[in-house]
Each structure stands twice: as C-alpha cells, then as structure tokens.
Length: 113
Image (cartoon, rainbow, N blue to C red):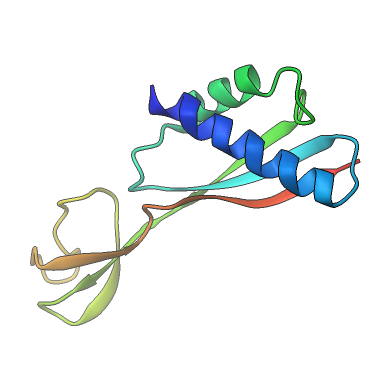
C-alpha cells in the first residue's frame, strides 16, 4: 500500500512546519488529492492515523479535498475536466488529451496549537 509511505511523508512535512512555527501539536491537516493520482482517500486516512501515532500530528483531523482531473484536448483546443486517465474529451470525443492537473497530492494547510 503506497498510501502508508505517502502518509509518512505528510506527517514528516507537517511536523517540520509545525516545529518551525513553534507549535506544540497539529490539530488539523488539509490534504489535496487529485482525482487522477491513484491515491485512495480512505487508505490515506487510515495510514495517516496509524503513522501519526506518537507524533505532533497524533489525533489530528485529516481533511481531504479532492481536486478534479484536468486536461487539454488537442482536438478541440479546450481545457476539460476528466474523471479518469484514458477518458475521451467530453466535448468532442477525441482522445488526444494532455493531463494538466489532478495527479497531485499536497499538504494545502494545517492548523496547530
């Protein structure tokens, strides 16, 4: 499960930032996950809870914000929203699409105490 390694990285990132801010603990983490990222929100939630034990993020709420898949359609020259890799353009039906967003996963924000 690659979500466990991703959750470990998230905890490391937020702990580093919280320490730099002089915080004692992390209460909420907002995580953006792209619809095309192949990261399962429930798996990352479970993994975050497990790997945050004993850290500044232990007990922190994990808020997951889904980012839609975005692409540029070369056939009709339009930026489009797509649900999955390999989908056709919903406007013209063409398959010459270049992914422009929705594959990312990033810590958007956190709340500390």
